[in-house]
Amino acid sequence: MRTTVSLIFLVLFAFGMQAQNIKVPTTTDVKKAEQSVTTEATKAASQANIGSLIGQLTNGISDNAFTDSFKKNKTDFVSKVGNVSDAAGASSALQTLEGGLLPTAMDAGWGKVKDKWVKDAKTAKTVKSVAGIAGTLESNISPKYFKGNWATARPAWQAALSTLAK
Image 1 (tube, helix red, strand yellow):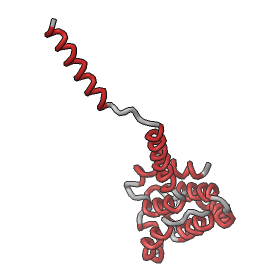
Image 2: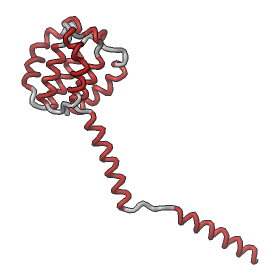
Image 3: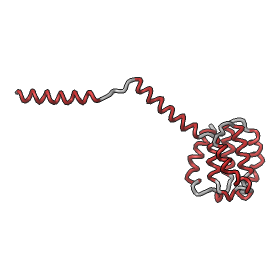
Image 4: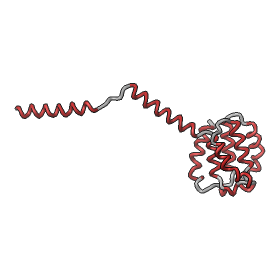
């Protein structure tokens, strides 16, 4: 009997020690975790700004698609455009990018949409509209002028652009 009581006491003691190590999250812990997740989501969304997307597009295009003048300034252009988050700055950057592309870098259909694209770029007032013209420009660049890694990066780029276009 004494052995049974000792054994029961030992099991209860061991269980009690384990129970003390279990920490139930408090309301404060839960709120901190929620804030952390929200902060990370906001950070990720902010990294997909229109300027960074224009920079990604520019870096995805082969240097063979650019004029000599643009090639000389490409690194500086990408560096500066990455900080652009407003419609006016992004629209200006897209116009600069388009102007730096050789006519041969564009698909045959570009001639049909270019005038409207230029008009839309000059009058863009929102990031949503700039995202639309960025997508139009990208879709009219001949696929042979994109670097090999663009095919992999493109779906995420388009998804981010689509998010901004909503």
